[in-house]
Length: 56
Image (tube, rainbow, N blue to C red):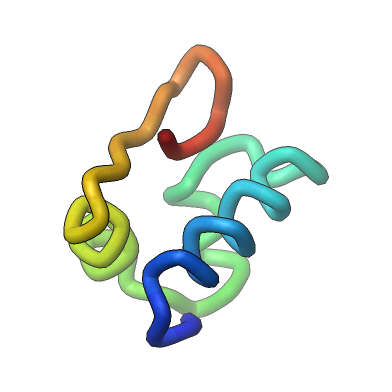
């Protein structure tokens, strides 16, 4: 998982767009802690939009 939250946001949204059905499944595929993913993205004001399957 990238340390820089902006880079993480870009990477996660790309992977979600390219086929991962949810952040939880993406974390499982990548071996990441899902709570840590949400925490890091929340630190830059991002929340997950389930309908669009991306973070804003």
